[in-house]
Picture 1 (cartoon, one colour):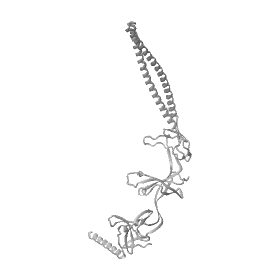
Picture 2 (picture 1 turned 45 degrees about the vertical axis):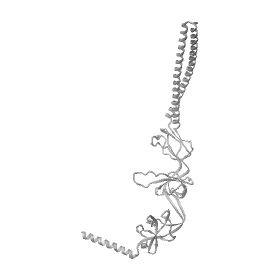
Picture 3 (picture 1 turned 120 degrees about the vertical axis):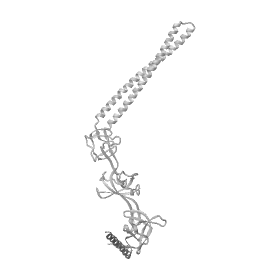
Picture 4 (picture 1 turned 90 degrees about the horizontal axis):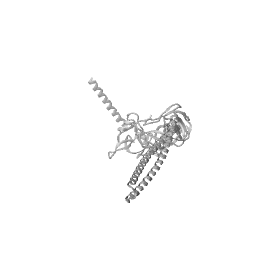
Length: 416
């Protein structure tokens, strides 16, 4: 068994040696070639796919929860800003608003009553203050007269008692006034709370009428009358009643691969085509380039994509949101550029040890490595400089180009 295996290996080696010898006798490595050509108009583009979207649109939801009792529009209808497009059941909201208004009126009556009581207490305080002052004057006169022996001691005692009583009444009036002031402040706070509650209830009642925030067209209407509507809370999406779009200006929103997005810039021209409108090309310009990559589903190492918006120069009534489209964005353009097939450009170590781009130029039955400067890429071709127009360069096959060296013998494969 081992002898048979050794025999097979030896035979295979002989075949490989014979093949190599045949190649040498035939003149070298078999390659494909093509001439360096000059193109009058060489364009570098980025192509991507996406869909048509309105420049401005709004997903209309509800700020209150309830049953949808009225839909005033249909899909495709034109609406104005501020127009009522739907209505939520308002029975509970109206009852809450009425109760809140009643509480406001009751609180206002309390405040008025407290104000009247406070004014009366202030008048009582003024009177008590006047009596206290008068009692103090009487006490001083009585003391003077008693010092001169003109009045009996009992008269002084009565004046002293009257002054003390007046002072006590004054302190009582002041305390009563403070209590009434505190009571009035409390009623005013209750009135403010009642008015705030009434404002909230009025706002909820007003929001049962769903109004359009902008002029446009109803482009999506996923609900029907009678359905329950919920509002979004804490990151949970609420019910979307409809989408209103301003179709006076539309965009092509496309996804561009990460390898191409660095070549894009604002205001670059583009051409958009749609399967729904065959045979027509819509001109546009790049108006927005995503600053971060779009989320990728799953945990795989998939290539990232960026959202790019192309504004179409003319708004066609046939262009509806959601239609799929393809965009070709012009990133660069050269006049009379020298171009070669993209695969012809290879990387080899230069004289300084650094890698440099170049072409293998056919010279008789061998090739020489010619360093070049690469320019823009357009389709399967690339712009180059540093090589003569019409020079014949090696374009393949890939395996041959990968191993090809400067000065190596080659044979050009005949084209059928």
